[in-house]
Length: 463
Image (cartoon, rainbow, N blue to C red; front, top):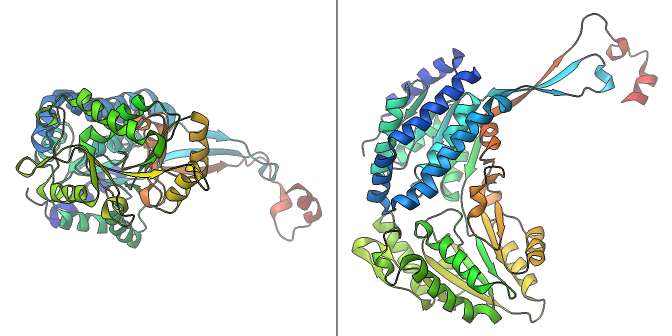
């Protein structure tokens, strides 16, 4: 894929800043019109996008629709319904110290936004933030991933057919292009990717004091406690881990399991893989491949860091890795210290001896960076206890992944797994500055605030 030149990147930003300054994006009717354009463009290009996802990732149409296209379309429809309400100025109470004044919060767009997406959900993770940018009244430069070239080109073609480049533009290229983009003076950066790359983004953006939303990842634990519904836990965990072949930022990364349910869980996990993908998962139309040879080699290497309890088969020429459970892993092994981003699942086993299972699990999680997600299977109240004592971007009790499906709750990370959140109204707010405005009457003027503060004793009692 050909890199967009630095000169062209600079020219696009200049044209977008000029367009934004014209005030064209401020009218709510304009924003809703553009959201409808985006929805129509997605529907018209649905086949092209789905075909590109199949070519680049071996992602079936059903999975492409459920995990990418449908989520974006739902986000757009929600924004069309609510943008006018979200954008409305809010009247706030005024204290007695500014008696007579009216106080407001005005929602103003941040300006020209840069949205950089990864390869694992290349449609959803690029276009969902764009919905927020449009609804907030921003312009946007979109930078898709070069690791999924067919998807990136399909998106570029779709956006070019629907929008003027001075409003929404797509640029292409590798990390050299990213480096230049991050050094430019955008008004906001929305980045989805790895914590390692996010540090470079943050360092570059700091030079221009550009605000950011960082959606990252990390090692999301999946806790299997005794007292859980083992069959359901295995099914929902197998689904969450094999969705996109584990190449999901909120995929369950590793399992913390009670020894009393370990054998039953492993056996049930194997049955659930066959239920989801058939007797031979290699032949499953719904099982995604690793995105690149490099990714295949990295994830395949994790299999050899433990004892294989289930799976372990690979095909390098197809970048296929079977869902694999491994045990007896050294605590400093890469598979337990690095985000896996693939279908290898290490198990860490605990029992009730000493401080107890739940205390051991909590300490294990707290000893590591804050993850993007946390999953718990077992008695509900014990799950709430673990959530209360730990921290993660989001969490599910007796489920995996599904917190991303509700637009009414925030999606985002904390600490090493990100900063800021979006979805629903939070997508609008991510690209919005909440501006305080106080309107003061001129018919009268209270003298207490002026020097030499003759009424200070009275004022002191008031404030």
